[in-house]
Length: 102
Ligand SMILES: [Zn+2]
View 1 (cartoon, protein in one colour):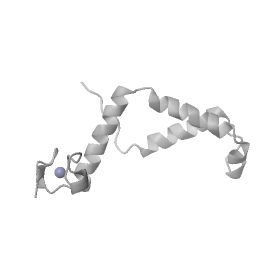
View 2 (cartoon, rainbow, N blue to C red):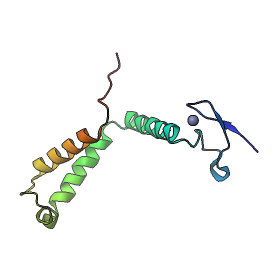
View 3 (spheres, protein in one colour):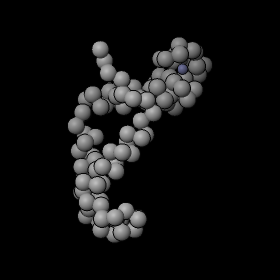
View 4 (cartoon, rainbow, N blue to C red):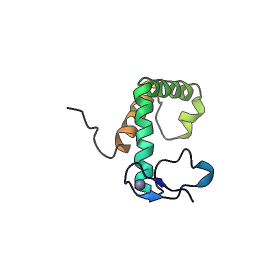
């Protein structure tokens, strides 16, 4: 049985065989979360603008459907209020404040 070493905690683990070539971390949620975070950071480093573009597209889509704004109790969401809402939401979802590199 092939065993692999976790990228983060350095423990030996048995990979899930169909995905053994791709799997690089053990099955603990701590290491999996850290690995996912690593991939997301790498993607963000490659395409720093993409998140803003996605948000802008979402605002356009939201405004193209007036029924969505009347369905919720939101009062007349323009593009501005929508982007403010999403901004607040993303800030609230961030558990720890962004660390800056020295
Ligand atoms: Zn691990």
